[in-house]
Length: 264
Figure (cartoon, rainbow, N blue to C red):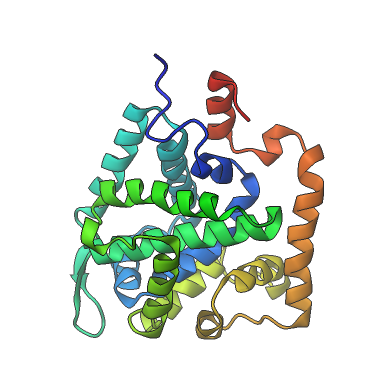
């Protein structure tokens, strides 16, 4: 029997994460993650993001897609790789609070940002999913979260519960401090102080995927021009996607998986 990994062949996660355009939401997800001061402290004190932003981002994406599209052994190796990276990440934030990357509460916040940002951006481009499909996406993500160390009692039961958890966190714990803002600026400007217009397009798409308080914290403008551009990008992707070659529209990990299992 062929090993189709940890998810069903027709899983919603595979349908969503096969799309290359989903990578355009990556900056927003990262900014939401580091908006948590304890996550930001860990990145600031332990990550090589500032020194090598592009290779670091590519490693993260490759590991994530290995979990979604790899055989079970490959997915298990990716989970172990994430855990090894997290193991030494511990310390104290600027306000004196201690943190550790293996903290189930921090892992849940990171998983939340990935799930909700991906789901929102996918639906902006492709249109709304059915309620059952949206629920399945979170159910599948719980597998990842639990394997990484989020304890069952912390996991929101439904997608609506997850969205309520996100709102609660944005009103309480996820309030960027100076370190979070500094790390966020590095996320937004990974190649250094290039002229502002170089980053404008990515800033506009990112701003459209962030809650208003985080836009303000990171100094991202979301006026009429940015709103029009954000909507225009979504429409352009939706219209061009059916005619684009698969090597552009589908991530390599999904292309390999679909070639083996004969699915699209």
